[in-house]
Length: 503
Image 1 (spheres, rainbow, N blue to C red):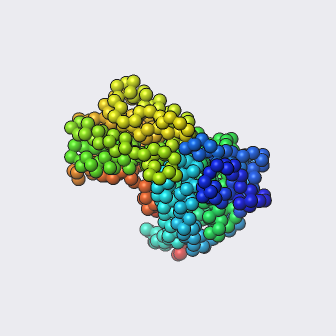
Image 2: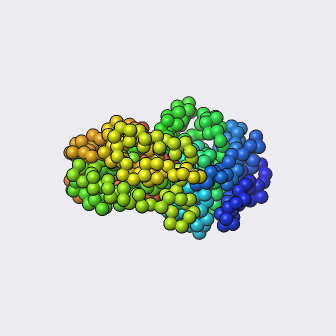
Image 3: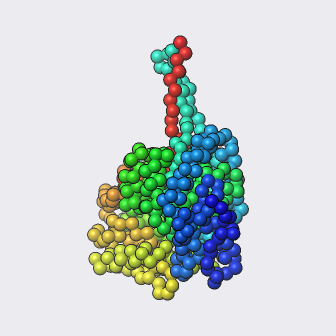
């Protein structure tokens, strides 16, 4: 394994502005295994395209199953070689240095993110801040891992418990939040004393590669973090998941893929964390402040162009205010500026690829064919890139597919309800249970509905729930486990109990 991330960079675009090209040229494009940057065993590469133009901006190494097993071997050796016993303060300091480096380089990291997955630059900057916060949070948690020592209830002995790292972990991260989904998993794993193999999405791997470089520069020992990029996630990662050296699997992505990965994980009885699909209801009661609700709807729907598992997927609004809410939301969404995320004033970037664009268009067409009214948008944007106009649909019928399926795009379907029970029935009528948004001025109703709604998270009178100090995760088909907060590091710790005789 030889080579340096700078000298071996395989960036191929020659038409980009100098500033954009300079940011790309700083990114490693090889695999990162055992503290070394190296090409894949097969010598192949994977193209990374700018979704705003369709042009290839980089080529990264295409790992083979042998490469992935080598990465797992490096993680296994690093864990048994001393990382599991490393001082908590050492782990904390590494995370803190990485946090400070990300903050210092926020502009370049934001530009990189926009180039590889399309979101507007302002949103990329917000994600850099959010992603960095996990490293800061878990730098502080690393030195606060404790157990307990108590007297046996009958006397004559003592009970000792301790927290220990679970061991080598395998992470598979998505393309929609390419930095934050890495830090949200890697931060607590490092803090706990685990080692890692991470496979970022092939559509947006550059932010993860840059994060690995930053952690390397922050002093993370070789083998603690290993990064595998590949065009064939299933065939490359399945042997790693089934390998007895792996002790933990964490995946963020679709429920369909999550089910398959859990089946693979069963072979070794792995601990698993699954953050899967969503179908978030946004419920607005008659007593809500409509202006506040529309503002929250814009945040919950349009963050990341709607390509977020937490995106409000369907809007259930009390009958007396449903038309007013839909009209105001359409006015706001219809006024958003669409374009390449690097351009001034752009608020809506492209969808990630043509497949996602076609899916969004198909869902809208289905709803319209069944009677929904288009208040704004409802069509793709002509020209290069994968753009769809922000869309609001009114009078959406119950059998419209987009009330059941995750849209993952800038489309807001509005349906009316007549009572609280009807609203709850509609909100809970899904196999998913990640997050719900609730707008009401009635405190009793807020608590009552928050308890009865079937999700792992609730945004009460706000359209954003993500926070490094909070447990992020869902129930039902939206996943298992939590990321963020004290609960997030618990996912990477085993509890050992020692029974002590003293008499």
